[in-house]
Image (cartoon, rainbow, N blue to C red; front, top):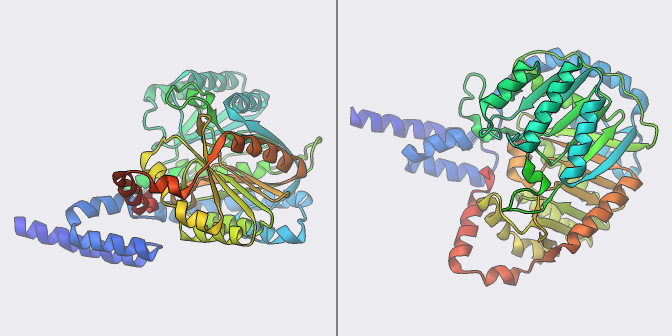
Length: 471
């Protein structure tokens, strides 16, 4: 029986190796998985079932049913948004083409955008959106902590339900693994409609713990929303002694672009519950600004690598400046090439990363990019004033991007993310001022600093680089 069991395990290893060769997107990843599955199947098989998949197959299949239910709603919403469709400059017209291919909605004008810097401003704006809701609130977070901040928003939502407002709440069960069930049960008992996103839900998906819903959304009545990098927890106010000041960024939106945020939530709710929400799809232009905004949800259920394609296209538009802030810098070969080509054509390419680690292997892997980035003229900075967690991109004087996407494989291929692309001179100027201050609080890194690190540190760095596809 032992021999039969060993034969069966090796047979499963060979079958999974064939699956890896046929399905893993990169040749390096396919070779690595195949060799491991054949040579060490007892170890590699469970790892492959958890970390080897890069397509959210359950969601892909269910999306056909989701689209059947949501398509009429979103098509109707798209027609209602037609008067607000923005015309872009020739330099940015390719982004509009990609937007219409990858998203339910394209760039719209008539939006007001407020830049939110750090936790105090962001949580105040979220509370404002929640308190202004008259009909419904949509809430979605990757992490919710049962601390002072988490309980404050719990009480806010319960109070709004008491006032007659309907509240829908999505959380990621992996990101919220430490959230006690009592927190969620209390919300449910007070009338909040709560659901986990359910990345492991459905036949054949029980091992999909490597997929996460990383979106952060607070939305009211289809009219206003907040999206960005902050979850619900007191560390985002700088109250974690291990990190100190927490540097993060979000935006508050009013106007037609909010419909794009709402469409993203609708699809996630449909996947999680199978139910269609009755939402307001009548857009209303903001009075005080006329920003052009695109909301781009991306994820592992996309038919193409939408996140990679759109970001690479945006990077290719840069002519003078490309500034990126990302707490996790583990780009794949395509992004490395895009950044190098931008620098080689004379663009001021700067990458802002944290100087503190909250995920050790991700932090270590970032050191492995020093040589190839600096050889092409890309400048790398380490933020020194606490922990830097914002996800921001600034291109020339015309385009800014703020959302949940990190510059790593997880965000581009494994996570469900959402990003706002902003075409507005006032917003771009505000982002420029913000990042300029951030760079003043950062130190320019040098390849020689890494070369002087101990040998054991360099070995750990290179080992971490090998883990890049699953970090």
